[in-house]
Length: 407
Image (cartoon, rainbow, N blue to C red; front, side):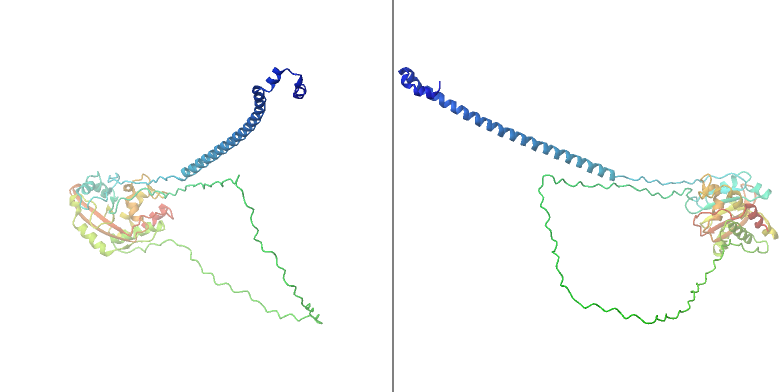
């Protein structure tokens, strides 16, 4: 039943019903119904507001998470770049040691350069080598020895080492400009200006010539004379000095040493008289009395036995040939050291063929040697100017060098 109908028929209702209709209970229920509808509308609005807020919060959290992930990736990339740039290059150096062992063989002796000149051990080494002096003199061969008063010759020459490190170049990522409002650049171009129009009368064309112009006379050109080319002298091998005359052991050693060096493309040696006086003083002291051995003035020294050559010194092999011939085949020209890596093996060869050597001085004597129980003829030679440079290969055959020695 509608309210209108109820109101229209209010007069027909009994008093009790009318009283109930107008009671506070009925009025309150109608009011509550209206309030309930308003509450539902408000609830719907609040729910929509919450949904929007939750969605906005979720988007904010998602954005923060993305930023954190990108930051972590950038930090890891920078750390890897820094670790790639660190490194160390190991260094290596070759060290060789020398010993003072005596190499066996016919008439060959060596003394370690660190022993004093008159060391008794060196003297005993000379005298106790079986057949050293006696056999060499009886068989016409030479006994030899070498000494370097410098520090032991380093058998190895380590190559320089050069190691390069590739350093990666790290790049810093450009921060994203997403979400940042950018202002369009303001144009600073200057508006074009209109230049005033300059009016000028046109330039009249030049009058057309009535005759062709006479060309200038052609000057004869002479090609420039090239400068004279300097003649390059062809390289020639050092020539040994002419053979001296007489029975001079000094002249024999100087000449044969120079011939051997010329065969390797090296310069000759000359006699140093001042040093020779000191060398002869040492030889005259008869070191043979104590077994013989290296001594006297310091320097790169060779020691050998010798035989009297009389008037035929220039045509017989001498100590210089013995020092060279017996050790040349043991020398490694590629590594510039003895093939076994021990300087003692080729000490005579290296002393006499050192590229820097320019002078030589010797002393010799014949004294009684108790170790061999006979007279012992020994010669000591020192070489000046040694630089331990690379010894070149022979320019001619070994047989040709030997032939030149006694020619």
